[in-house]
Image (cartoon, rainbow, N blue to C red; front, side, top):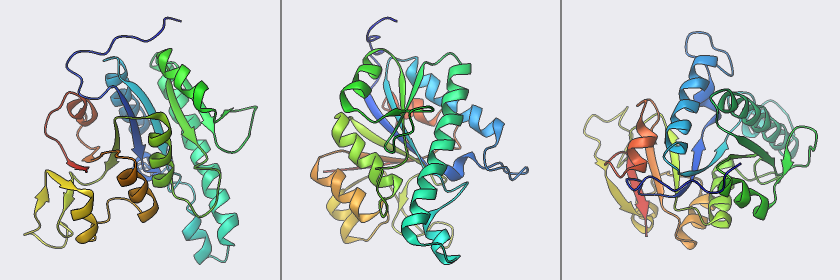
Amino acid sequence: MPDTKPADPRTKYKRVILKLSGEVLRGGKSGDPIDGVTLEKICRQVKEIHDLGVQVCVVIGGGNIFRGLQGEKRGVDRTTGDYMGMLATVINSLALMDCLEKLGVNTRVQSAIPMNQIAEPFILRRAIRHLEKNRVVIFAAGTGNPYFSTDTTAALRASEMHADIIMKATKVDGIYDKDPKKYPDAVKYDQITFIDALKQRLNVMDSTAFSLCMDNNVPILVFDLNDEHAIQKAIVGEKIGTLVKN
């Protein structure tokens, strides 16, 4: 396997953490927790930026299968529910890996909870080496601890990996001053600082994740994944979504 592929000169970012909600995998009409067509569309977007020589790490949630907070409402102990949610992220990570490899993208899954038969343990130096070997790395099982979201996982791994940016894929095209679905006069921000986002109580990420990004100077790009080439557009510096930075 060749070492690091030189990045396309058009690319603005060289190493990124792509944060996906588990819900993005859910099928529209089929209602399946993991819809094959949706999964392939996402993986093709990842392949697009990988082919540009960008080093890609992925963190995906598990909300399409099980969410810890939802379990608590059903009487499941919060800690147990969070572990169940972490296992759901492993299922999603394996689905992503399988699809990416079928598209010709070498991929490794690293789990924060040891499960050696299906994933590597998270080892920072090994993860970086995978990126240098042109492999996509998917971080599964959250941080390995209950009470922490996959947003926090993305912020933690981005800090550890010295990623240039967290790209947070959502169902809206950026950050607004209020809910655009409820208020037609909502104003979208092209760029906003961490401090202003905090002052306005804009829920970009949960507070732990947001603080980690702010303290470690990791910018966050919030964008709409429904645009089929959204990730590539962001990578080459096109104005898309909302950028949060110091």
